[in-house]
Every structure is written in C-alpha cells, then in structure tokens.
Length: 124
Ligand code: HEM
Image (tube, rainbow, N blue to C red; front, top):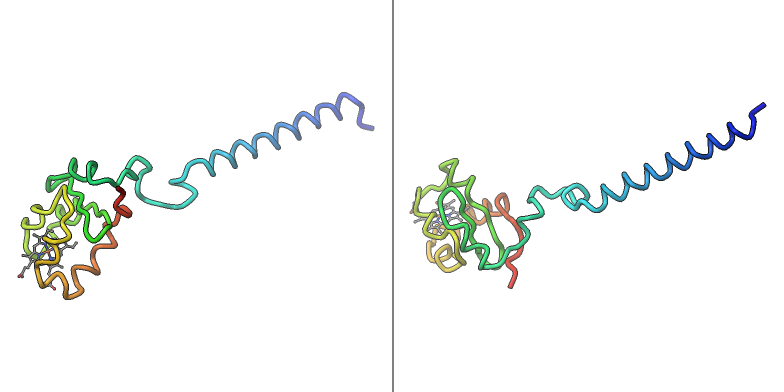
C-alpha cells in the first residue's frame, strides 16, 4: 500500500516535472533565433540606413539594394566578386543605383547570388 506521505511526494515530483517542462517550453519560444531557425543574430535586426553606414569596409560590408539589406563581408572575403574590390565602393550605403548601373549585374547571375547574403528588409 502507498501511504499518504508517498502520495504527497509523488504530487511534488509531478508538480516539479510540469513546471520544468513549462520553463523549458517558454525559454525555447522566447528565443527567436531558435524558434524561427534564423541564422542572423537578433542584434542584427536593426536594418536602418543609419546602421548600414557603420558597416562600410571590405571586412564589414553591408549594402542596401532595392529595399533589401545584404552583408557581403563573406562574399568579399572569399574573393568571389568578378570585378574584385570594386564592390567595396558600395559598402555602407544604399547601393541600388551603383549596382544597377553595371549592366552585367542585371544579367541575372549577380541577382541570383544576393539572397545568400540577405539580412532582411531595409527599415526606415
Ligand atoms: C555595388 C557595388 C558593386 C560594384 C561597384 C560592382 C562592380 C562590378 C563590375 C564593374 C562588374 C563588371 C565586371 C566585368 O565587366 O567583367 C561586376 C560584375 C559582377 N558583379 Fe559586381 N559590383 C558591385 C556589387 C555586386 C554585388 C552586391 C554582387 C552580388 C553579390 C555582385 C556580383 C557580380 C557578378 C556575379 C558579376 C559578373 C556578372 C556577369 O558577368 O554575369 N556585384 N561588378
């Protein structure tokens, strides 16, 4: 037979387990980088022009093109740009005009690369 003390202990253990799962569940939901599987750290969601101007070098290069913000640092670091360092001229600004002025960019190849480096939509 189970005595009253044991029933009390079992209730405590049950309560502890329920509370533990609630805490684990809430922690997982409140951390957006886990719940929506995004690779961009939460601190990088401030995609304003003011923020973009701070990332204006070859090693830290953000660019706005057609209302989207891209972090091209890795693309530059990997030496993937066919025209070399000329891409750095667009770092830290809205480079939409600079980008489209080069006719080769509009052939599709350059535009197809962009999504790989997308941070998100440009904010006001
Ligand atoms: C906004 C600053 C940029 C400047 C000044 C720039 C400059 C250039 C220039 C001058 C060319 C032509 C090279 C040639 O005639 O052979 C070129 C080609 C190219 N650029 Fe850029 N670029 C910029 C941004 C980008 C970005 C953001 C990407 C994509 C991530 C990109 C990808 C490419 C590709 C793929 C080509 C070759 C296109 C082809 O031949 O089909 N560029 N770039």
